[in-house]
Image (cartoon, rainbow, N blue to C red; front, side, top):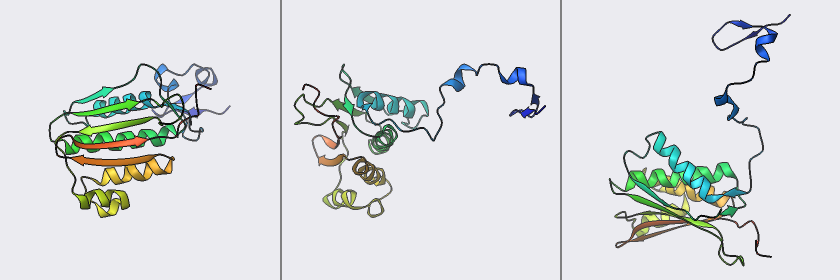
Length: 187
């Protein structure tokens, strides 16, 4: 009879191995499973902000969410979209200097003219023209504070979306991410 060694170091019998898994391990997913390519953008944004808050990465910065009531479908990789949101919200928390940040999720229109998108707005933060250009070129050309923006741009383009950065003295920094739409839902 073969024995299985558990993490504590003891052996288990076949009767013990057939016991159901605890609740907390049931939610864990294998790394090799296929990624989800039709996601709810609002759900991904909310869970990413919750993750950053739970890990204390926001460092006390208040992030307000404006999410629509209906799902906002997009045809992208769930993992990549989550990485983009994590990078952008972490950048906002680092750059905003104690003020709050805001994340707004907008649905695609019914006719496919406007894709699903979200914006991360950080008041009081500005980028120079040189920094704006460097963000659009390479993460290696920007300083450590704005490197997350350039990396998020690369990931967004890898999933078929676009990332634009606008810096304004009155509104601060606004990062807009437009994602590929899943198709025209009204037809």
